[in-house]
Structures are given as structure tokens and as C-alpha cells.
Amino acid sequence: MSHLVLLSLAVVLLARRAAAYPWQVCGTAANFTANSTYQANLGLVAAALPRNISSSTDLFATAVVGAAPDKVWALALCRGDANATACSGCLAMAFQDVQNQCAYDRDAAIYYDPCALYYTSNATSLSSLDSVGRTNRVNNQNVTSDPGRFNRQAAAVVNATADYAAYNSTRRYASGEADLGGQFTRVYSWAQCTPDMTPARCRGCLAGLIASMPRRLADRVGARSLGVRCSYRYETYSFLGGPVMVRLAAPPPSSPAPAPAVGPAVPTPGPVAGGESWYVLSGR
Ligand SMILES: *[C@@H]1O[C@H](CO)[C@@H](O)[C@H](O)[C@H]1NC(C)=O
Ligand SMILES: *[C@@H]1O[C@H](CO)[C@@H](O)[C@H](O)[C@H]1NC(C)=O
Ligand SMILES: *[C@@H]1O[C@H](CO)[C@@H](O)[C@H](O)[C@H]1NC(C)=O
Ligand SMILES: *[C@@H]1O[C@H](CO)[C@@H](O)[C@H](O)[C@H]1NC(C)=O
Ligand SMILES: *[C@@H]1O[C@H](CO)[C@@H](O)[C@H](O)[C@H]1NC(C)=O
Ligand SMILES: *[C@@H]1O[C@H](CO)[C@@H](O)[C@H](O)[C@H]1NC(C)=O
Ligand SMILES: *[C@@H]1O[C@H](CO)[C@@H](O)[C@H](O)[C@H]1NC(C)=O
Ligand SMILES: *[C@@H]1O[C@H](CO)[C@@H](O)[C@H](O)[C@H]1NC(C)=O
Image (cartoon, rainbow, N blue to C red; front, side, top):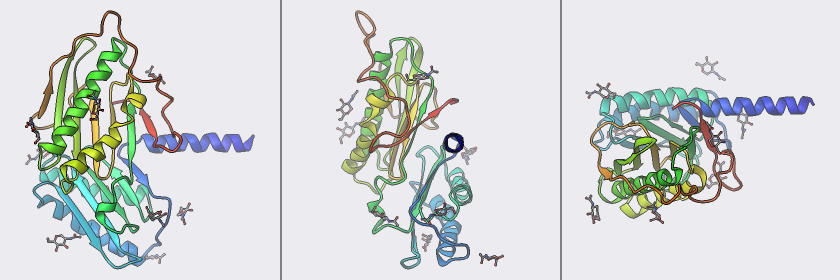
């Protein structure tokens, strides 16, 4: 009985922590101690990176500070529609927040709308960090009118935005919108990779995130899949600054009767075997 109570309490705390913006992914493998060399190295990175990123034209910065085993590898990226001031401020806040939310973790990722930060002591190179620190959020609201058509259009604009980010933007960033009509006027999308990636590697990174879309995201009005190296998001409201790069026309309605959702039924979001967690957002 007391075990059950403890367990459900733990689940509630986990869910709260996971749901609160910003979203962090705290490492679990190793800790550092107060006043250690690792903490000092992390402090050097925290002092330099927000300044360094604002002087980078693509708002991307990496840092490698110290010597093993206290070496800190860090990587930060701001969204393609952020400006240098907002980017630098976001990153300074990220270093503060993550050291509270993931106190003494040697590895952590934290995601905001305008910026993302990741650091670790356990890397052989910065380019080895393709799949670390991922997290996903899905809107709890569902499409109720012709969801099959919505699902196909959402997948199409996410795909097209990923293509544009990988192949048509040297910054590896793209924004998109697709007309719908019906329950929702449009669906808006965003995709981005770190700009050091080749087009093919960027598209491959995004394809890895997008692969679970029909299964996990059928009928959902919005979702985002966030990673250290690449991310995408779609919503039925505009969440983008700057010009729209990819536009799709409205698709024909499903006929003769509304088609069922693409793919099999969506399982309850949460941990899946061998896979990632999709946390449910109740608000926007
Ligand atoms: C370091 O990374 C390797 C490869 O990703 C992983 O197998 C190992 O468990 C990690 N070790 C720690 C202490 O995080
Ligand atoms: C790191 O610290 C946390 C909180 O103090 C503790 O729960 C966890 O077991 C520690 N992890 C390791 C690998 O020492
Ligand atoms: C770390 O350093 C601070 C400031 O010098 C000191 O107040 C604190 O007691 C130290 N903590 C540990 C665990 O040594
Ligand atoms: C910040 O940029 C300066 C100038 O390019 C460079 O010397 C320094 O190493 C960078 N700091 C970090 C932590 O990467
Ligand atoms: C930078 O972006 C922020 C947040 O969107 C905005 O409030 C600010 O006015 C922008 N600054 C400049 C110089 O464009
Ligand atoms: C949306 O659909 C999912 C999966 O069927 C369900 O768990 C969730 O409660 C639905 N959301 C609302 C607001 O009804
Ligand atoms: C998205 O792209 C993938 C890989 O290129 C393809 O298999 C899939 O059919 C595309 N989906 C849509 C809706 O365009
Ligand atoms: C994007 O790049 C591809 C490959 O280089 C090219 O074929 C296509 O025309 C470009 N699309 C746009 C919209 O610029």
C-alpha cells in the first residue's frame, strides 16, 4: 500500500516536472560535486557561450573546455528566427535554469522556444552527439473533423519543411505553412538542424524524429520533437517570426467519407519499449 502511494506520488512529480516549460532532459549516468574542477569548467562555458553565440551569424556555438575527466563539451543553438540579443539572453537563462533543474548532473539538455543547450563530459567529439537529450511534446487536443486529411497535410508540411531546412538553407532552418480549411485554417511548421551538419545528415536526423509521426501523432493538433542536433514542430496557430519559406496549398477533402487516421491507433503517450517518451501538453 505505502509502496503504491509512493509510486503514484513519484509519477505525479515526474509528470509535473516533465510538463513545465522549459523542458530539460537531465542525465542520470554521473554527477559532479560542489566546487569540483568540472563545475569550474562548466562555469567558464556558462560565462563565455552566451556572448560567443551572439557573435555567430547562424546563432550556433560550441565549446570544449578543460581536460578529461573534467572536460565539458557544450553545444547551443538558437532558432533561425531569433535575434542575437534574444538568443544570448535565452542561453544565459538556460545555464542558470539547467543548473537548478539538473543540479550536479554531468550531462543535461534544456529546451526553450528560442534556444537549446546541451552539455556533457562524456563525448569523443561534438559530432558524436546526434541522438542525445531528445524529448517530445504532444498537444492533448485532437482534430475532430476529417482527421485523416489533417494528418496527411501535417505530415506533408513537416516533410517539406525538413527538406527545405536540410537542402535549401545554409543555416539548416525552415518555417512552413499549409492551408487546410475546415476545422483549422492552416498548419504551421518549423524544422532546424545545427548548421554544421551536411544536408544529408540533417535530413537523416530529422527523418529519424519524423519516423514515428503517423503512429504517435495521429489526430493531434500540435507536437514537437526536440533534439540537440535537430528538431521539428507543428501547430495550428502561428508560432514563427520571420518569413515563411515553405507553403503548401490545401489538399482535397477525404472522400467519399472521412478516412480513418493514418496508421494504427495512437497508443497512450508515455514511455514506449525501446523508444522515447511523448509527454502530453494540456495547454498550448
Ligand atoms: C558515455 O557514453 C557512452 C556512449 O554513448 C555510453 O555507453 C556510456 O554509458 C556513457 N557513460 C557515462 C558515464 O555516461
Ligand atoms: C546523482 O545525484 C542524485 C541526487 O543527489 C542521486 O539521486 C543519484 O543517484 C546520483 N547519481 C550518481 C550516478 O551518482
Ligand atoms: C564551495 O565553495 C563555496 C564558496 O567558496 C563555499 O561556501 C562552500 O562551502 C563550498 N562547498 C563545498 C562542498 O566545498
Ligand atoms: C568564445 O569565443 C572566443 C573568441 O572566438 C574564443 O577564444 C573562446 O574560446 C570561446 N569560448 C568558448 C567557451 O568556446
Ligand atoms: C529581438 O527579439 C525579441 C524577442 O522576439 C524582441 O522583443 C526584440 O525587440 C528583438 N530585438 C531586435 C533588436 O530586433
Ligand atoms: C485525444 O486523443 C488521445 C488518444 O486517443 C486521448 O488520450 C486524449 O484524451 C484526447 N484528448 C482530448 C482532449 O480528448
Ligand atoms: C515524408 O517523407 C518520407 C521520407 O522521404 C516519405 O516516406 C513519406 O511518405 C513522406 N510523407 C508525406 C506525407 O509526404
Ligand atoms: C531546394 O534545393 C533543391 C536541391 O538543391 C532544389 O532542387 C530545389 O529547387 C530547391 N527548392 C527551393 C524552393 O528553393
